[in-house]
Amino acid sequence: MSKVSVVLGAFYGDEGKGRTTDYLSQNADMSIRATGGNNAGHTVTVDGVKYALHLVPSGILSNKTIGVIGNGVVIDPKVLIEEIEMLKESGIKVEENLRISEKAHVIFPYHCVLDQMLEDKREHKIGTTKRGIGPCYCDKYERSGIRMEDLYKPNFKELLKEQVDKKNELFQMNGYPLCDFDELYQNYTHYAEVLKPYVCDTINLIHDYLEQDKVVISEGAQATLLDIDFGSYPFVTSSNPTIGGILTGSGLSARDIGDVYGVIKAYSSRVGEGPYVTELLDETGDQIRELGHEYGTTTHRPRRCGWLDLVALNYAIKINGINYINMNHLDTIGKFDEFKVCCAYLVDGKETKSFSCNETFLAKAKPVYKTFKGNFGDISRCRTFEDLPQNAKDYINYIEEYTNCTIKLIGVGADRECMIVRD
Ligand code: GDP
Ligand code: IMO
Ligand code: MG
Image (cartoon, rainbow, N blue to C red):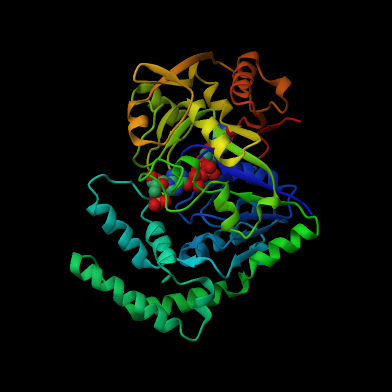
């Protein structure tokens, strides 16, 4: 039986999980998305062509890897169909290679209206992507959600009517636009028809692949500090993007997990509200944003930027069982003359290396930095660790020592080939 390699975000998302998964998928038979929905935006560049993916697993770009959208994902069918069309036009074999879990929950426009309404009413905004993610997961856990398989049931119309009536009542009371049931029903029966060939029992499919000793990887969405349990609640997403969510969102067992890759950038970023200890609200933060092109793939919002936080990274390693790190954007950090990394927090005058998502702790925590020398020059053609300049090696060596974890993959550019792989 083969083991699954899992790719997870270690920080607040957008670490480059998509490009990492795409890289590993060149040798994979199957690539699974297990959590989140189209709040995710994974940009992958292959031979200069940029793909922005929200729901389809990045592994599909290899054109030989089966991409599975697992039961833990929430699916906006309109967005998914648009993505499938975009990929097909680019010559990606989606029809042959995409599979969608019949158990995945479906996002309807009323979820997006509700997302907006709840956010409007919050005193402290979360800064959600307004893609209906939270409300869809709420329906799932309230046990009134509609799953992919329900779209094909004879009672789909009644199921939908019940939901639309319930939500419209709420919208009417609060002065939000009502959903037109007939239009919604017509649209969703059309989407269901288009997606029918892809919908199946993905749980058995995944296990068949493992039994046949095939190479299976899992692409995380969102990240550890956005986790509903382990993140900076309430400034989080509504799922578990950490290792547990990979299992419940796909049907994999704990025994099926092999390597766990924690993805980081050589600096850090966050979109939306919430604590961020190493955030730089000055010119340096702006410089990182411009050098790293840190604007959201999904909402195009400018990302908040700062230095890498090793205290938080060790927490992500602990929570997820990360045994390999993939560091992206080494090329970007190398454009600075000097840059910093957070190696401890100062809390109430005491230094600590222990992270906590406790709100008061994070509000008090001040970063303690170590400074590194930059000016790496053009490293985009480096393909081995030995090719890198000493300043870059010093940074990598320090992080490995601090975390006691190997940095196995190093991104030196956005393109698929701009990756250093270490044994
Ligand atoms: P994800 O959500 O974790 O998949 O990450 P995103 O795709 O949202 O954000 C990562 C961005 O960084 C994308 O635009 C990637 O093309 C880009 N990227 C990833 N790795 C590297 C790298 O090593 N160097 C550079 N310059 N860009 C990278
Ligand atoms: P990828 O997979 C960065 C953030 C939102 C917001 C919070 C809740 O590309 O790394 P939601 O719409 O999920 O209810 O929003 O979570 N968020 C992300 N930030 N990358 C993502 O995904 C994100 N998905 C959600 O900005 O702060
Ligand atoms: Mg992203």
